[in-house]
Image (tube, rainbow, N blue to C red; front, side, top):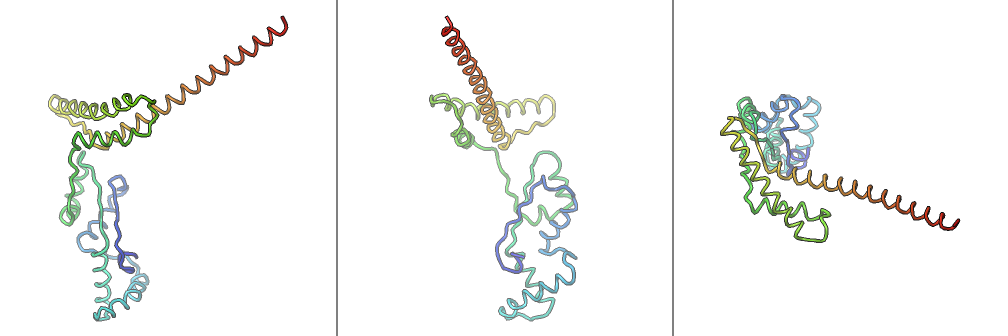
Amino acid sequence: NRAGLKDEGVVFLFTESQITDEHFLVYINDLLASGDIADLFEPEDKDQILNTVRPAVKAAGLPETKDSIWEFFISRIRKNLHMNLCFSPVGDNLRNCSRKFPALVNCTIIDWFQPWPAEALHSVSQRFLAELPLGEDESVRQAVVDFMPYAFYSVNEAAQDYLENERRYAYITPKTFIESIKLYGSMLQEKIEALKSKSDRLSSGLQKLIDTKEKVSAYL
């Protein structure tokens, strides 16, 4: 609608996790290859599209035949619709999909995300840990910030040893790094809340003891 009828730029983001049915990729493959999906529209819907686009075709000085109008509509889609497909290199899914649906590779530009350098890991760690309640001593926060990239590289080295010794892959990605920081934050928050709950119960118990002592003293 927006790309073909309104002549607006549109980004379609499709992630690997959204492939609940491989048949989705048939349509995406056709769309990437030709800009059109055969039999996508019912006849009445197609007629409505033709009538909507006709004024733009006339203004462009093009023939107002059905084929010409439809080609104009498809050309707008090719110009305005940008497909962003997100696949993980982990496992065989990307390889298998590329074989079955060649337009995923032949009609796209692949942007490979390389491993993050130490500076990037440190910057991300600092950003995600900035708001965590780690006390007033900034050296504690800095120690945690420095530890996160160190732990990430250590696990990557262990994964490499695992590959060399066991001939099996263990993938540690930047997403794993971010998720580990978020997990640390949630575990820290849970621990703080648990300690606060225990502290509140202890304070309440002490206050009851003090109140009881005062009442007993009043009777003596």
